[in-house]
Length: 476
Picture: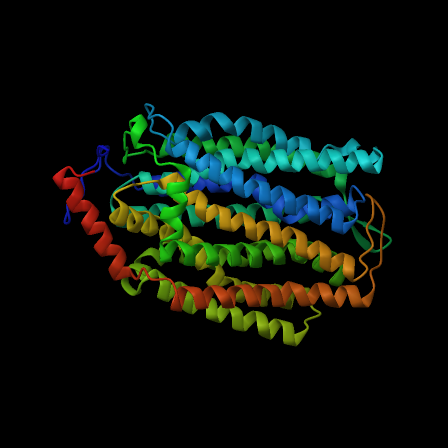
């Protein structure tokens, strides 16, 4: 393999072209764009299937479960495909986002066609199953290569942390935008009860598809692949070898476990929150306000990389996740009935989770370096999608289990416009899973980071120095 266009001395890094301060924010725009699909489908696919299409919760949960399992493999496959793709003028990974965003835009709209609710039930189930699976596959084709942008944008560790924090900022900001807008436009009131306004979602989907294109375009124009490793045919790493590299790396195993738990906790709570505020609190305005729970993370975002550089990412994130766990347990014990008190507590609870989400992409670049130090092979897309594989398993579980809980407690489905009153037992169980699931998930992540994840800040800097010396010697 030959080195990229950047040299990396231990004291000053030569980046060609020079790294711009605008690049982290340009990168952030891509994850805001991702959110226009991911947040929409993550938080509202289940309730759309149950309350707009009238599908049984267990069947809806199985559709999501199967779709997410399939996407775990499509993510990994796309990552390997991207790693082995030829270098183009703008690098290896930009082409995938530039080209494959168009099928993703189409599937966003196809997911929420309003006339599907009038079809026979069997046809509804078949249609939404096919479209949902197609959607997660299309999302893999852009999000997996996009994730590699941070690690190939610069060899400078500080700049890579800034790119990772930029993506974390984009993910958080995108979540706020989408989760604030949707509750305001997708619910209506019938007989004093909040009900889903399914037909309105097609207009949301059209607007979101356009915004996704714009956000991706800003990212494509504002980021640069500086680390470019040209590969001959005999240098392509076989898929099984890539898997072996990852599964023999303790840091990768730990982060994959943390990723599974992180996405499970976030998505489980997100899916249940749609029902919590609609049925338990009967207040979807509060759900819209909940979108701002990560604003403190956005405020802290510019300072987080420096704090993590000083104390170490694993220590900072692990400690904050302990606080998150304690707050969720308190919320469960309080059994809050005021939605605005619940929102306030959620803001406090989500800070640690949000900071870890902000820096998790930097964890990945540290692992890519660690594997390269040990194997002399750099597989950015493969490692990234190995991490995404674990996330997708978490997504699959978080799509299935809330549906199973709802069905087990007697949740009554509806079609658009129907007002349904749920039983007290169902409502109490919804509250319980909305607080206990994230408490358990975040607590386990804290344990993994503090006691099992091996890459301290010192080790990561040592790995970066080793790779810098290899580049100077022309060994990579």
